[in-house]
Length: 364
Ligand SMILES: [Zn+2]
Image (cartoon, rainbow, N blue to C red; front, top):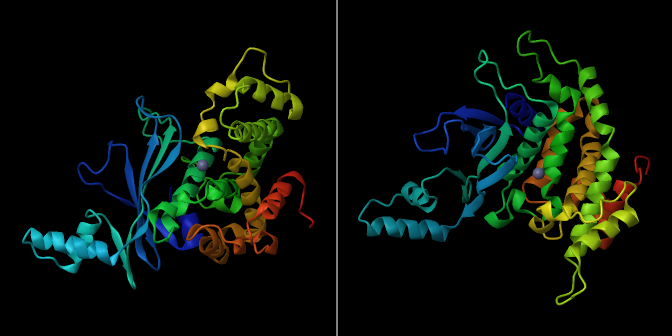
């Protein structure tokens, strides 16, 4: 968490500060609170981290917006003041603001009062506490998960829209996985790892060759996984393209036929119905493709905005500001990549982004 805090300080001028919790503030003693503090705006968010395995806990890593950021309107404050007066208590402005936001944290910047985002990060890391007080030693993929979820969290933290229902991760699903998959690039970057990855006993820095070797091994089967993701994205589109009342629909047939037509790997065995286990086919409601779409976009952002980490670009404040202003605060703007062709966000723009995933565009 200290490493993430240092990364965010370098990129956005914000840091994560541990805070004790009040009795009853959290849902379990394992939960740790971090306050997000900005160099310029002070306290900007509250983050609850519940990172370790418990038998009664969902095993899926996730980011929850307990509350999104939003503007608290004059009228709400006025109504709250009224309610306080009706109780025959003194309705100071501060009391009215506290009442309008249920007593939770607000930021009072020039001209507007903002409800601060409250975020929960939930993971499932195993931590053997019995063994000589060792720290939780995460595998690479666990650290990647933490960075990914933190990518969602920072999106919620830096969002500054007036309305909560379009703040941060509540953007169009097309872009929801962009900040999180971008963080996976940071997590593999040697300058980022240098900031915190040290041996817990000897304090030796982690030799980067060990990391790159592991990454090479992990990448060996990347193509088959990607093929599977493409077929899932197509399947999701086909299931949601049905006409009402169409009677010859058979979900297994659609799935297996996609595998036969587009797959290089052998299709699933006859009589099996794997698609029935895959909850994202209804959870995403026809936008499952956004995962692949965002991997393509975040690769591009990593290369164009952060120069793929060359010469310390992964820790450059100007690059961080560019991402914050053009993506995290108000949602995606075409200026994020300074590519005229993306401005309209229309079919042509979508086609272009799609082509980046297929062709190597490093030279265009
Ligand atoms: Zn995600």
